[in-house]
Figure 1 (cartoon, rainbow, N blue to C red):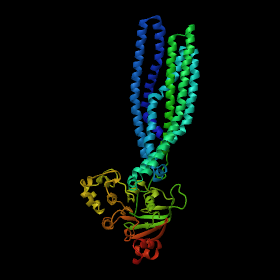
Figure 2: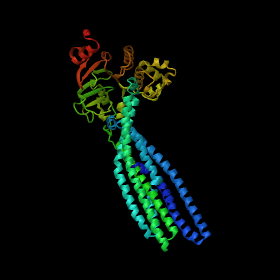
Figure 3: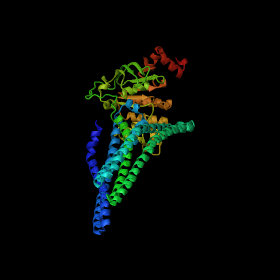
Figure 4: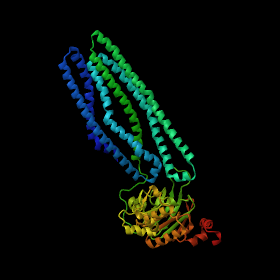
Length: 575
């Protein structure tokens, strides 16, 4: 999607209207010194009060028109810039939602937050300024030169010398300062990342009394941001005084040359006043142009960062005509699957993984930490695409399926539980927006969550803080299981989601699940061997490879990896 064309189409009319108002305002500002010169050189000099009153009235009228244009321009520019900023944030957020996990990993969460907030604000401010003062500045500069030439051609040489010098200074300022502002945005990314990590792990920090370490880490990021910002500002500190000095030298030249011309009778006092006013307007306009270009450099750096996200090609390729007819329900096939994370070196995370889960079957997956268990879930949900081989659901390659349709068939209870701010009822209804209270209570009973939820003062209307901080680990896991069950999926994946639940509660959940999900394909990923012992089939993973497939008794006889896990958790004397 060409976003620039979209914004131009939506906002070019009010933008042009704001520029028109700004042009009228600039024209009114340019007329005033000339009118003032005539009042002095004709009205005051000749003592013509009628002329002074007449020209004064014209000056007031011009000022009034300019003020009206300024008010109109302010209203239009504020509305346009705010709407543009809101649209840009919305488009950026929608784009991030559409990106695959791999794309999001590439940018990093903190960087995406900065792009959504700080970078969009920089671009929005530039657009606002463009309609408020940025266009007015060059209009005033060019107009002042033209009006000065009309008043006195020979004196205008001062303008023709001063303006190119200032233009050169501004050009040098842009080229030198741009890299600094790019570094500033990256430094903001880093400080946001540091803050996010601290806030997400604040309990661990408090538990281990690592305040000093976190403060030092934050101070390091903060110092980097300060140093880069100071370096960027030093550029302006060098150039701004030079611009002002050049302008003041120009004014001194006008007074020196103009004074001589007045003494010789070749120029009038009013013209000198007008020249000084025009030089002051040029000073204002050039200073504004310098400020504009500084903001442009910031906005350009931010716009490039926003563009990186908006122009990002999704690593998950979606076909135009997905297959939507299926002969089976809940069947899964992994066929010679290999997978490596983007940019990762070394061996693949998964190597030649092949297995089948039949409809209605309960399959356990077990293995040591880092063996690739959770990666299987990510691939099945198509958060990532396989490096080689293929995955089929209901005998159809998942790459040939509509992603929404695929994920509608699957419910996942992840190892790391994520609950959202809102009531417990709202969190469970994430699985089914129109779920009735009876359905919510039914799945909560299966997940062994109904009892503790009912004991809460507000019951299902109990409000949860961010991440469900007011629930224990086991309670959060049970709520997330209820959220998955209410979806009534074809495939249910439980990714080590009962690790914080005691064994008795886990057995109750498993028993209730068996009755509830007779036609449901269930994949149980676990560290505890007791969680998968009664599965229809157990897949043993070791270092990304399948070390064994079979029932519990079969694996105890023929799979050394499974036997080692069993011995470490249950004991060798049981075998």
